[in-house]
Image (cartoon, rainbow, N blue to C red; front, side, top):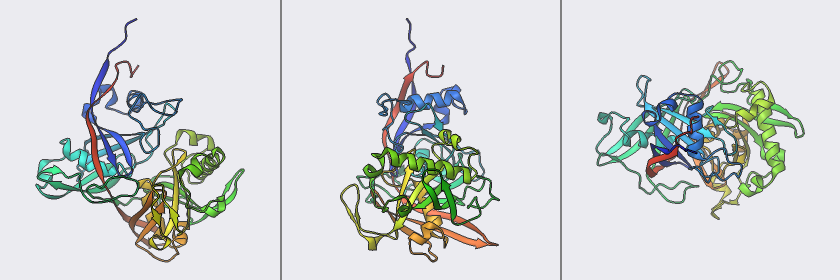
Amino acid sequence: MAYQAQIRIPATYMRGGTSKGVFFRRQDLPEAAQTPGAARDALLLRVIGSPDPYGKQIDGMGGATSSTSKTVILDKSQQPDHDVDYLFGQVSIDKPFVDWSGNCGNLSAAVGAFAISSGLVDATRIPDNGIATIRIWQANIGKTIIAHVPVSNGQVQETGDFELDGVTFPAAEVQLEFINPADEGEGDGDGAMFPTGNLVDELTVPGVGTLKATMINAGIPTIFINAADVGYHGSELQDAINGDAKALAMFETIRAHGAVKMGLIKEVSEALSRQHTPKVAFVAPSADYLSSSGKQVHADDIDLLVRALSMGKLHHAMMGTAAVAIGTAAAIPGTLVNLAAGGGKRSAVRFGHPSGTLRVGAEASQQNDQWTVTKAIMSRSARVLMEGWIRVPGDTFK
C-alpha cells in the first residue's frame, strides 16, 4: 500500500505571555488552507496533534493544555491604518475542533514580533533602535491591538529583565493596548458591553443554584462569579480544581447557562461547539497565598483574587483576554470584580492568579447609562522558541 510523504510548511513556534503557539504566514500555508474551512482546520489539528484520546498531543506540537494548544495565522493587513491581520485558532485537545470565536491575549504579545521578523511590516515602520508601534487587526473579533515592540539594531529585541509571573525566565517587555475591547457585536444586547444590561445578574444554574454573576463582553466574553458562592476561597491552584471532575462539570454547566443568558448561544448544548468562549472566572477579596511556584503572594500587594477556566480547565496563570475583562470590570463600580477589589472607581487593578500577580489598566466611562471602555493596557513578553518547518502527512486534507 502506498502512503503519501509528509509535506513541510514554514512555521515558527513562539511563546507569547503565558501561552505558546505555532505561527504561520497565511501565504506559506498550502493553498487549500489559505482560506477558512475544513482543509485549514484539518491542517491545524494535525499540526497540534489533535484530536488525541490520550490527551497528550504526543504526535504534534501541542502541549496538552489550553495554553499550548494554539495556532496563529498572520497576513499583511487588509484594514486601513493597520500593519497585520491576526487570526487565532484554539485547537481542542480531544475533539476534532478548532475554535475561531475569540482572541488569545497572551499570544497577542508575540504577533508584533513575528510580523516584523517575517517581513509583514513595512521596513520604514521599524526603527533601528527604540520601540516599533505595530497596529494589529484582530480578525476573530474585529478589534485593534497596538503592540509596542522593542527593537535593537533593526531586529526585534527578545531578551530583557521584564518578569512575568507564570513564565520562568525574564525577557523584553512588550506593552499591549487593546483598543475599544468591548465585544459589542456579541450577544443579544443593544451593543453594550453588558449583554443583559445589568452589572450583576441572577444566574440560575440547574444542580448548582442561583448565583450572582457579572457577564461582560470585553477582551473576551467572561462570566464572573463569587468564589464563596461555589465553595471556594479564590486562592486555589490548578490541582484543587482540575483534579476534581465534579468541580469541572459544575463550572462547565455555569459556563453553558451563562453563554445562553449572554446571547452567545441559543441552547445549552451548543456550548460544546464553542469551547473557547465565554470564559468563566471566580473572584474573591485579596488574601495571602502561595503561588504554584512557591512564591508568597501577600494580600497587601494585590486588590483581589481571580481564578479563570479555559477550555474546561483552571488556567495556570491568566488568559490575556480575560485580564482585559478583569481590568474593565474592575473599573466599573458595582460589578462583582469591582466589589471584590473593594469597590469605587479605579483605573488599574492588580490581581492574584495561580502563578502570581498581574496588573492591568482600563479606561472606562459612562454616558447615558451605558458603560464604554476606550482601551485596556497590560505588559507581557514574547520570544521565538523554534523556527523552521512543520511537517504533516500529505493526505492531511483528505
